[in-house]
Length: 351
Image 1 (tube, helix red, strand yellow):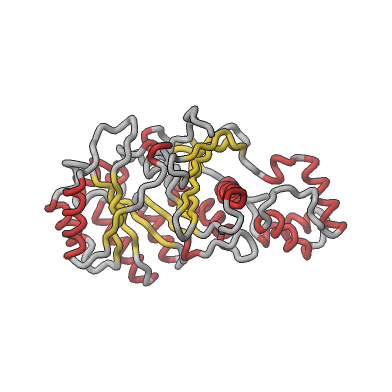
Image 2 (tube, helix red, strand yellow):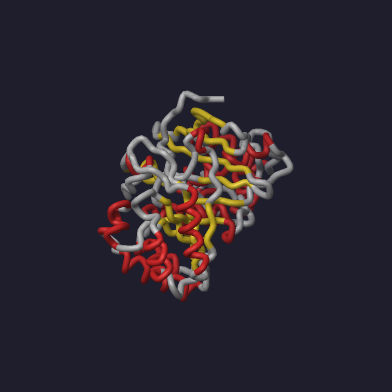
């Protein structure tokens, strides 16, 4: 049921002979209520009978709730990583991160990833399948329930599509899920608080611009030349750096929105002063914010992260060129919940 928006719920009810006017109550129960139980909802009799019959036939299908296999918490208590099993047995990971002023959920859009970024654990494990809209939505609902349990006075305010998978490789399902998540009558996370991170799927970026989507766009760049980028991000061979930057320029022109460029700092690969200067020249004229990301360890990549002095020098060059440039706050490194560390596998560290 979490695959369906308001119009879809109306259609389902109508097809089963139930007045579509009950769709609002059903949507509220599915998306607005923290408690997933439906048997205690004060539905009007026609909807009550339909829900009881539908849940009785297949509760797993009706609610589409993934099974929690494992929850592990970082030592500082600010990050929780969930290993979730879907109905077909596939597993994915979702991360809930706490900050002083907000809580953010990081969700997966695919089981595995086909992009193959050399420093990313998800890419190292390969691609298994796309997630359906309801499987993406269910991760947000799970994180919201957990947040309500641990901090009833806090709301889940931000969503980042930076978990397992490439969101723009699963475009249709992701957009359907985000429509449900951002619906004020549903979960209600505003579009401006939703960030889509892409490794540079150029057709997807252009489509976002054409459709004038209101979400935030983050582009994983990691290289200032085609050769430098292709060595770290194999998909650059399909969509070269020149094409990617052109798409980003057009996106900014059409939407008027700032683009966040993500840059994982890898010692000896992409952290030199010359690289920083090339990056500044490459992004000239784009309304850009550059997020510098310390390299997180993965078993399939032997590279080392930049040292502190080198990272600060890189940042200084970009700031001197006029770009907002910040270091991403690291979260959950001790439980393999940081950027590029998700694999959808158990850790044996359940708490």
